[in-house]
Image 1 (cartoon, helix red, strand yellow):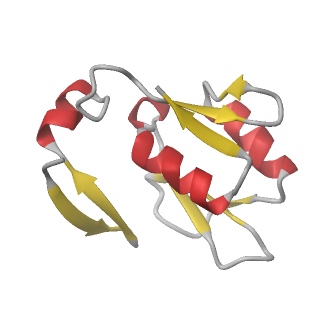
Image 2 (cartoon, rainbow, N blue to C red):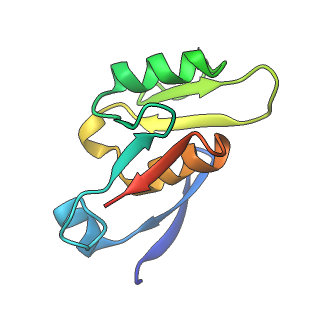
Length: 108
């Protein structure tokens, strides 16, 4: 895995020019986020927001207007996602997996 780690908007992420060119982490295949209780593949921010609200997450409007953000009052966690769903890559998916154990899974 090659690239450069960048700290932006309070989040570290790996910038990989090859992965960004195909939008798929360099694997040639797009990863998907799966909501484990139902097996639903998250295909839009509307479906993701519905799931997150059911888990106690609320929209957060106090941050960067270029981000779609959620917070949970029982936690210090903040989920920050790109405003455009087409830029919702595996880095953001794994962030959701970590902040919601046993709820989401990333699949090829």
